[in-house]
Length: 267
Length: 220
Image (cartoon, rainbow over all chains, first blue to last red; front, side, top):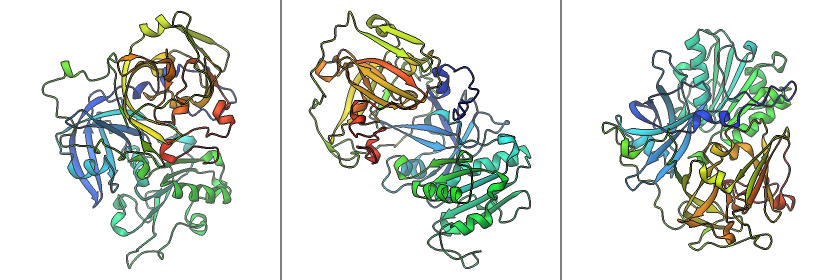
C-alpha cells in the first residue's frame, strides 16, 4: 500500500483488507543457512514456501513456538532484497539483546534445518528500490543494528546495477559491533560512500575520534539539503530522534526523512 | 505477548493436516517463564482475578437488537447484526491484558472475530478510528492498530459468553494497548482522516496507550 501522507488528488480508497493482506497468514519456513555477522549478531536464511517477495526496508514477523505451545513473535528487518534466482528466500539479521526472550534463541540456539513461522512482508514507507523517488540521492543513517534494513537497500542497489548515489553514516559503539563493513566502503568508487563512527572505542586507524555523529559530520559527509535526498534513519529511538532533529536543522524537508526505530523494546 | 489461533483462517497451518515431513518448529525454544512478574510492562503488577473498571453504569444490551456500525471517512456505512457477527470466521486469542490502573492479567482466553475479517471489504484510507459504545463511551486509536491480527470483536471469555460487566455481549479487544482502548459494549467504529479524541483521551489519557512505553497520559 502506498504511503498515504499526500491527501491531494487522493485515489479511490482501497479495501482495508488489502492494507495488511499479505501479512495475515503464517507460513512455515525452514532455516536453510545461518552465519555470524558479529559476536552478538547472526544472519538467518529462511526458505519460505509461497513467499510473495519483499523489498529492501521491509520487515517480517517471526513466530517461535515452545514445546508447551507457548509462542512469541517479533519483527525483524530483512537484510537483503528478494533474489529473483531464489524468490522464496528471506534473509534477516538478528542482534542479540541481553535478557531478551527471542533474540538470544535466534542468535545462539536456532539450528539450521529447523522450522520457524514467518508472516509478511510488512511495511511500505521505509522502503527503497531502484527508481524510487525519481532517482533522488539517498542518505542512510544507521545506529547499531539499525544498519540491517539499510544494508538491504545498498544490496538492492548493487543487485540492480542501479546508479543512484548513496551516502551512508553508520554509528556503532566499537569496531566489533560493526556489521557488513566490507559492503560499505569508505570511498564512493561505486557510488556508495560510507563512513563509520565509533561512540565508545575506535580502532587506531579510525578516520575520526570517538564520538557520536554530529551536526558537522552530517553537514560534511551527508548530502546537502538542496539536493533533496531521501533520508532513511534507523536505530535506537534516541539515535533516530537526534538524527532527525539535525536533518531538520540542516534544512532537510520533513517529508524526505523516513525513520524506523530499533531497540531492545522490539525484542 | 500472546498468541492467536486462527481456526478458520485457510492460511494458518493446521496441525491435523500438517506435512509430516515439515521441520520441527523452533526446537529448544522455551520462552520466558510464564509466571509472576516476568513479562510485566513498566509500572504494572500481576493480578489473577479480573478487575472491573468502567466509566459509568453497565449498559444492558440485548443480542436481538445488538448491532455494530462502521462508517468510513466518506460517509459510507456498514452494519452487522449479532447473527452476522456469528456467521463470520471466528478466532481464539490467548492474550495478556494491561490496564492503565496498573494491573496486568496474563493468559486470558477470548473468542471473537478479527477486525481484519470484519473490515476486510470496507473501502477506506483513513488512519484513525473512533470507537463508540452502548452507554456512550468512546476511545480513539490508529486504524493500523485494528488491523494485522491485533484486534478482535470478542464475545466469549474463558469459554463462556462475555459477562456484561466485562463488556458483553461484545467488546473490542486490542490487547497490545492499555485496556481502556478495548472498548466494552462496542457499538460503532468511525474511520477518520484526523484523530478525534475519545472519552478518557479528552480527560488527559494518552492517544495511543502503549503499555510497554508506559503511555498512560497525554505527553507520556
